[in-house]
Length: 388
Ligand SMILES: Nc1nc2c(c(=O)[nH]1)N[C@H]1C(S)=C(S)[C@@H](COP(=O)(O)O)O[C@H]1N2
Ligand SMILES: [Mo]
Image (cartoon, rainbow, N blue to C red; front, side, top):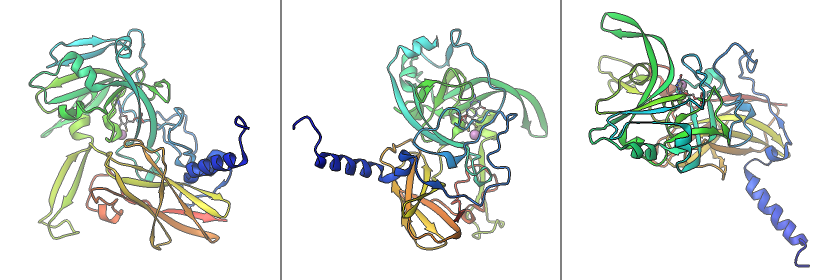
């Protein structure tokens, strides 16, 4: 019976399938029950139609890609409504051949799909880590577009502007100006020419939504969300560093290092940095009751450095290794699961921590105490759940 499937084949296929799904079979089978978190704010998950930003309810994560209507969104100004037919991307500054490219021009170039997971640098336990998502973006390599217009021999910085703008305070010594600011971000030319950065027009196989930057946005894999400029209008090559509002002032972190140790004494050095690459973070997102165990599911975000481990700790016990999803890629979020056997009824505290191949360990909240500003909060996030 060469064309029929033997029982052995069936067993082999189901073994392969269960190996594949060893990660989280209950999702695929739509079985299991969510175990409630008891650490959620009272109004958590209530829809807020007035909000122009959107938070992902991470308890709903059920696979690699966040659906477009759940994908988190952060907008500093109104979300521009752009006519795709009239749209032009300006390539300016030190480009050898400055140009204006239509969407059709870009789409006629070699395109690719790219899995990118990222979070807003303001993502934290306050919003139950909901300013994070992962999408499959389709677009053209930024490096191909830069080469098409030529990289000027003095270009050191590439600045990306969105169509959106609005009034913002600009402080200069004792003066504060209320000036119209365009949303702008920059990266060094070396990073712009890497193979990963993408000018994307699709999210999960469909045109970007208005929220996510229709018709074209930048995706800078391994960086915080703020680098992923939406409603892209202009890419400017320049020699000088770009110190615009959203590059050098709004998105920066101030922390104390050195000195007498923990306390900010007279010897403390204050380090200020721009918000750029994702700091290593893991988050427990969901707990499912499965047959004979509980499955803890979460995600890791980082700058693309390979991971050494993700571990889970229950009620202050030993750290135990979680299993990574085989579908993870270098710049996706990295999903993990942990089989929690023998959970007893009642409330428990569960926490995860990630370690990368360079030996960087996700810090505890206490270890971040000397960070004065709230961005880049990648601290371990203990969760409380109630087993029924
Ligand atoms: N043009 C423009 N791009 C932008 C922003 C913005 O306000 N305007 N917000 C940034 C910030 S702070 C974040 S966290 C991400 C969020 O991307 P998302 O809305 O696709 O989730 O977009 C970034 N790109
Ligand atoms: Mo952000």
